[in-house]
Length: 132
Image (tube, rainbow, N blue to C red; front, side):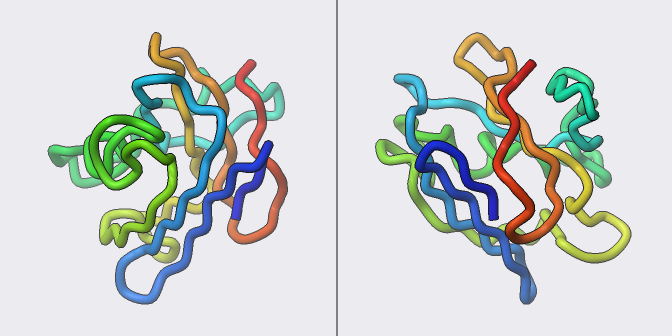
């Protein structure tokens, strides 16, 4: 679970990974969000988290949550209008060779710059870090 300023993201896995998202303070039109290849470094620089996670080189990329599920608080997708929703994603494993744990989740501003990022560590490991 990640928590910041009234925002929460919960992850669990049985077969597919369950994502339950409730976010606040997103920009009009919605914000893109992705899983990136590397964890957030000690400098908190979201730009140092690498590219989008995609071990299968697929379309959409495994880590392109916006393409798969819509913008956060946006006009389309599973989180349209509210920034809240629940999805099951088979391409975000929490265990095994392609686990997303230890990578980062990045929320972008409308201009594509990083808004916030956090290392995926599992449940209850602290709030997201603001973008540097």
